[in-house]
Length: 241
Image (cartoon, rainbow, N blue to C red; front, side):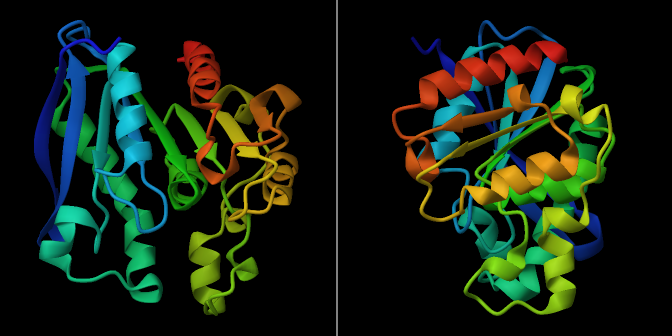
């Protein structure tokens, strides 16, 4: 049951470009005064008002975390400032913007941030952000990437090689014993958008144990029918914080 959900709409400034990302913070009256923060990253062409994003923002808020989501450049309310989304032109900055979002939380929300505990949670396009710029940002304690593409050379859209290297987890991730304390993956075998083989490639590249990879026989790209189970497994992994 959802406790009285509270929502704060905020602006996250990107000073070099003189624009602001429109975002929202979710919590409840039972959220501790200081708690971990979970940044929820939307999928391709989605935004902070999308059902999947809202669903997990509310779940995490109800579980005692501060959850925050934001509209990427060219998406949702942020589109009013940045103009329309162009995959080739806009994507590199969308991926690197996560560093500024993390900095904003640390610099402006320190009174509500418990021990700099920041978690990234995202699906598809959001998962790729997590396993690229999120992976290299050591301020992030835990990375949870759902149905994430390993290498963007596999998409139908013709992407320049230099861009592929900026958005493919293949070019960012590496093996490290600490990955098993930091990274959780999930994928459904019948995902029609991101081939299941991608999660196996990421698992091998990171050197993850099997328990760090949640696999569902069905559920598609949105984990239909498995969201309750997924959330409980994610909560268990977050005990590592």
